[in-house]
Image 1 (cartoon, one colour):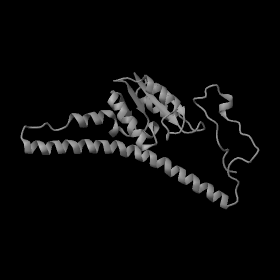
Image 2 (image 1 turned 60 degrees about the vertical axis):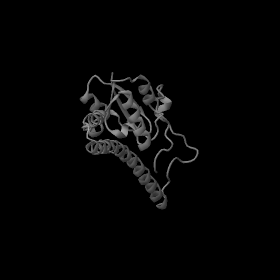
Image 3 (image 1 turned 180 degrees about the horizontal axis):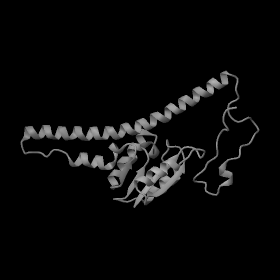
Image 4 (image 1 turned 30 degrees about the vertical axis):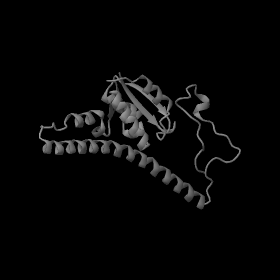
Length: 198
């Protein structure tokens, strides 16, 4: 089974670019898509996909940030899927595809039977695996940093707007119509907490 996973954080964003990139890589990929924060792993469509994948199946992501924006959770999920034998492909970070990790494992230097030489070989192999894991961890850490930076910029923008006397958020007593109220598919849309700056 070849699947694609596309995720946006808010239903107002467009998911089309991710789907287009995944389909360009593999036109037969079955797409799972949703609007949900990447800082949590209990996303409905993601959980549905995880229940279906088996060894030798493939999941294609436009980028590592679509899988997770939490470094620890993302790396843990990566390892779990890798150990299950699921192939992971990250179109914007091909250096952390599971095939790359498998190559690092397969290219380990073979021991020779010479005790002194084998001590160095085993140490070298451990370093290679540490470096491979660090590359994967680093990619998830970068995705987490991006979302943290976004939150900081948003908070600073709100503070600046308030200092300039602007009303931030929804005026008390007003209501907001969202796509959720018009949609029967609750897994795709969720209600917005605020209507933006005025």
